[in-house]
Length: 186
Image 1 (tube, rainbow, N blue to C red):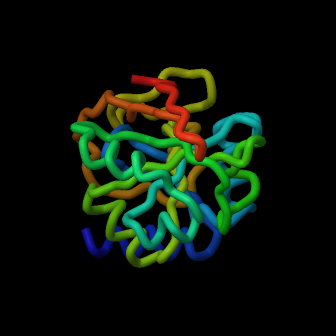
Image 2 (image 1 turned 60 degrees about the vertical axis):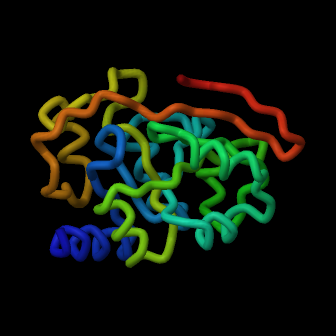
């Protein structure tokens, strides 16, 4: 795993995009603070920049670097969730502007999955995560289901968990600073 973290880190550090396993489905990712790398992902997915992507983070320090105010209920939701949960929070900062939604919100997920966690530990930055498919096409549930267009379009494919099947995307909950909660995807 260490070799894959080093390889992925070198690509990301140089503005590249990677195809990698997450705690949910396979993802396409990059440094969430690099607007040019984020634009490469939108182009590869043939996705409008008005459609947000989520960002993975590995802890409180990273979270508070991106969000000045995090509602207490956010921590409670993550603590109580028995499956990966993405929260859409208000007033994101310190990330690429093209990853932040028009309403200044950003979808984030705290991960414990070892590869993602350790990669971000090395990057010291959040990691973009969007499903490994062309926009509008079905989300692949296994590496073997990812289209050649995606595999050939990234700068590096992580060689871990390629035999694992995981068809579950995360739960998505929008949580505003004024404590409104809306479930987007169960």
